[in-house]
Length: 253
Image 1 (tube, rainbow, N blue to C red):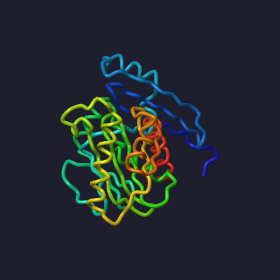
Image 2: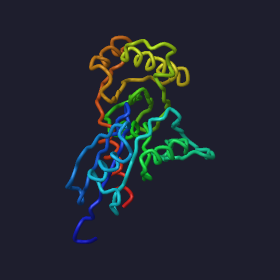
Image 3: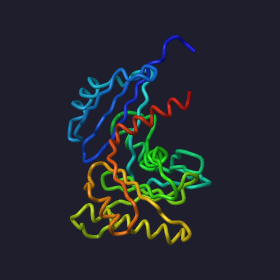
Image 4: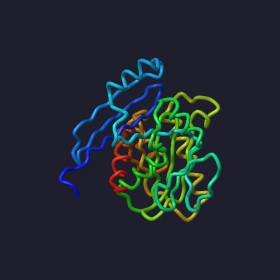
């Protein structure tokens, strides 16, 4: 091992409501030596955006790892054996948990930003990492809300039994006007679906991670209606996928 720890940089990107958020971290060993955030509106011209990015970070850095959050409803979590299909990319998050992503979506994101991202982080991958960092006992439901997409995982410490993703826009024929109420209706539907497929299991707790769009009272509302202990946690997505990239780079050593 050398006398000096190598310097590594991590750039993560999240697109929401036509605003791109960039998060940059530079590490020397385990120490953060630089950290910054930038936002660019998609209406910004390519020329202006290039100038902003050039000032923000050196995309030509040798030890730079780039990642982008994929929130497409076309992503799918595969529990168990994977059948490889043409025009799809596969991310083995853990043994028995693989995410399938349409290759077309990955390529579109690379083209949109002019960056060949090293990693395309799915909502399922984010939710799986959150689940693994959560202290819980028996079977629990984990829910991730980002923009109008909601990802669900139900599992215990040993395995994932159920996974699904729902688009709020596609779920309702008419906008109910109350995002918390719409969220609850989808959640209740997913719980019913899980019990239809797994009659002997019982969801003991619900952990909700969201982008700040849900009201603080949603946990109490859910508990008062279905009597399952529920917690609500805010997630800074661009920061979190950046941390996933760092963790995976350490794992690859």
